Image (cartoon, rainbow, N blue to C red; front, side, top):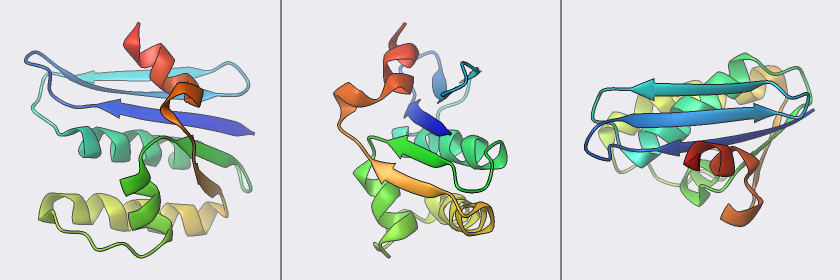
Length: 114
């Protein structure tokens, strides 16, 4: 199954993420906490990984997330380290695939903007 993920950091009133599953399920989470865009991207990815099946493909427009989780990019922000480690572990356990896509192709991003 295809799964699209996106996150949006603090905008003055909320932080949020969206996960859209190919089968029509959508999970939107809104937090009244100051979170960064990257934290929310990771929260979306972790939710997707916790709810995916083995072999599913997850799409994100975050090059940072793909780089840190699959390409060994350095983690320079300490607050992201636990999220990166959790995402790596889940990705390996689920044998899922994480793929970068352009922003305009991210279905979850379009839903998040609504």
